[in-house]
Image 1 (cartoon, rainbow, N blue to C red):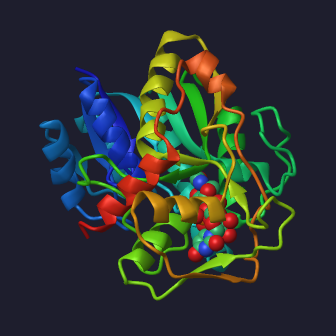
Image 2 (image 1 turned 120 degrees about the vertical axis):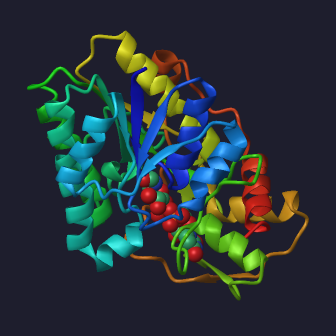
Length: 333
Ligand code: WQD
């Protein structure tokens, strides 16, 4: 039985996607170098689905080791998550991001071509839209310039794939994530930031847990209704389900490359999200306002209608549930 290879499959979005794939009966193989996760996530996935996960501790940049996996396993499709993803960190470590995210993709493409992979789903990002003033934003918005090395690696990734698609039969789908948050309802898997979180929600939950002293909201002087940034927060399980739809879509259609925004289509401010977290979890969060963070886009949220009409996918989980599940997960750590 042919299998789907999930690179970075023990990571935050990867692990939730492995659960959704297994629950549709798909055979999954994971490669993960464990740099941003722990091997125990595989057992937690198995606890949720009742199905074992085949995991290879492999760095996607190690082409020889990656080839070994393709030789051992009958891989039909690939979902490529394995990448560094912290916008702020990428500013401090641009070369590490270029190597891991771009060289890693190139290493994978060597195997995709050599082993005639049928479909490839690529984890892209709304950061490819750069410092846009246009929201809700559609997939045809021009890709000009990212405002972080992380975003640049996603633009480069999409450009390489657009070219690669012309010279191979692999069907390629790029998924542009907005802000993934929350955790599986079992609270067995969720976001596991190593060190001080750069993303908002892990910092919120760690503050609520007393791990962090106080949350600083970066800027309340933006040109938005309450002065704080606006984002499109999407539950990680809704995001994971979109990957199942993307693989099905690629295998059922004679496409070469296609791109989809994955968001709720609803813009919500940082302040609204913090207040929602307090309300649904019946707690008071210790937060203050500080200066703007370099590289932050003022406001961006998705026009997700293309994914709805073409993939037959739309988000179902509310912000309340996103905040409830994030707190439930944090309390297990
Ligand atoms: C969100 C908002 C901050 C921390 C993310 C992912 C990136 C990409 C796009 C997928 C901003 C504010 C944050 C804090 C704060 N997704 N904030 N205090 O920058 O939108 O990027 O979405 O590829 O991978 O990282 O997310 O969570 O860092 O910030 O006020 O302590 O929260 O200013 O307005 P961002 P984020």
